[in-house]
Length: 203
Image 1 (cartoon, rainbow, N blue to C red):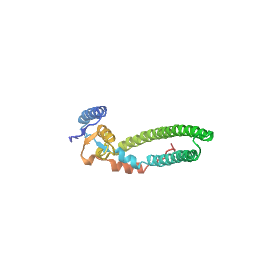
Image 2: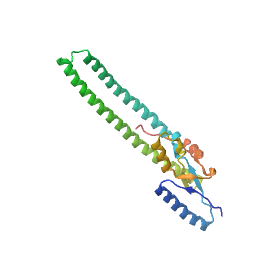
Image 3: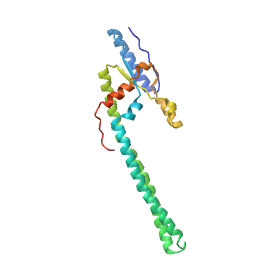
C-alpha cells in the first residue's frame, strides 16, 4: 500500500484538525487498502483570478475613488475659506465668523472621512465573506469531482509580504510547510473556477 507523507504546520487548531483527519482517514484507508488522495491548493492565488473577487476589487476601488473625490472637494472648500480669512482683518467680525465656520467645516470633514472609511471597510468585509464562502464551496465541489479525500491550503511565500506585520501573520497562518509538488492542484483549481459562471452583487 502507498503511504502519503505530509508535513503540516501553522496554526495549532488548523494543524490538529488536519492531523486528526489524516489519522482517521489513514485508518479507514488501511482497512480498504485504498491510498489517501491529498491535494494542495494556494487559495490566495485562486482568489486573484476568482471572478466575483476581481469584480469586487474593481467596484470597491471605484467607490473608494468616489469617496476620496467628495472628501477632496470639502478640503478644497476649506482651503478657499482659509485664503479668504487671510485677506481679512484678523480682528474683524467677518474674520471671526469665517474662522468659526472653518472650524466647523474641519470637524465635519474629519467625521465624514472616518465614516466613509468605516462604511467602505464594512461593505468590503461583508462582500468578501460571501465570496470566501463561495470559493470554499467550489473547492469542495472540485474535491468531489477530482476524487480527493483532502484539500489542504498552501498560503504561498510569506517572504513576499509587503510589511513586517503581514509577514508575521503569513508565517503563523501557513498550513503546509512542505509537500511534493505533484500534490499542488492550484492550477487545476484555477481552471475549474474559470469554467464556472460566477457573479456577485456590488458591495
